[in-house]
Amino acid sequence: MKVIRNIVVAGCALFLLTQCATRDDVRKLNYQVRAVNQRVEEVKSTTVDQMQKRQASSVSKIDQVEEEVLRLKSRLEEIDHLEKEYRRQNMESMTSLQAAIEERLAANDQKMVELQQQIEQLSVGLDSMQQARIRAAEQRAREAARKAELARKRTVMAASAVPAGSFIRVTPQTRKMRVGSGRVGTATIAEKSSRTTETKPVAGRTEKGKTDASVQTVVAPDTVSGPFEQAMAKFKNGRYKDAYRSFEQVLAGNPSREKAALTLFYMGEALYNQGEFDLAILDYQKVISNHSKDSHTPSALLKQGMSFEKLTDNETAKIIYNKLINEYANSPEAAKAKKRLENL
Figure 1 (tube, helix red, strand yellow):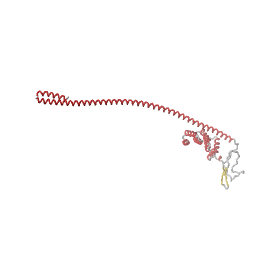
Figure 2 (cartoon, helix red, strand yellow):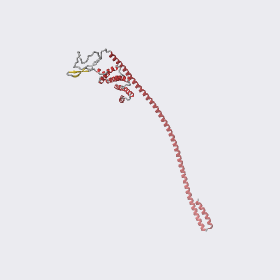
Figure 3 (cartoon, helix red, strand yellow):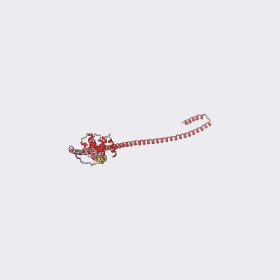
Figure 4 (cartoon, helix red, strand yellow):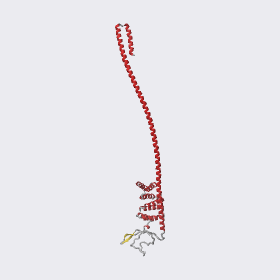
């Protein structure tokens, strides 16, 4: 626009100058005007072309930008659609997964309930088996106790049948005798198995009442201690059969509860040491049933379990050991029972 204005101004000036200028000047001016017009045309052509080119380039770029915007918009719409689809799929997956988890948890809960019921049934069955075994063992013990009581009564009745004024003869296995110049030796005497009654002269004296220096007076153990101590002496010497019979006689004398429990326990010990484990179990049971508060009851339980072990009845032995541990937890016998349980 500025160039065109300049051209108009130049034309006006040229018109004014032509009125007063010479021909040469006019020619010069015309020449200049033509040059200017030519220049204007060139400038116009160049400028317009450049502007048109620039405009065309700008339009092309705008079109490219619009296309890029459209492409980006389309991409954004596609991404938004994919995101919505992804969210929908994730929501469906989460819902199905949560449903599967809940179903699995419900199934696991059901299995846990079933397992708990089975465990309770097994526990009840095991308790029933244990109680049945305990009852069977107690029944056997009571039956054996009944038989033992009958045997004791028969023994008492046999002892009471001895005539008055008689006594039971005690015959030691050996006695001391003076040999030669005063040495003391021993001579074996066969022990009689049956009881006999007789009148016994004073040992160590002759028929005329004079002392025989060659014979030493023999004193039976019965004369130096009580019945229980005699039985214990036999037990400690390994004479278990004799000790058992002596303990029976002690029991027939109706001793105190403490002495009765101790006597029954050692009766069981005498049988145990003879290998009569089934009979020993019965005497131990008498201590357990009749003297549960006695200090020897834990020992009776322990030895009863050991007796069942000897009879290869390990299951019953376990029941006895568990009973000992539960009822006499602080006793030394309970600690021994735990060790024996570990080895079964």
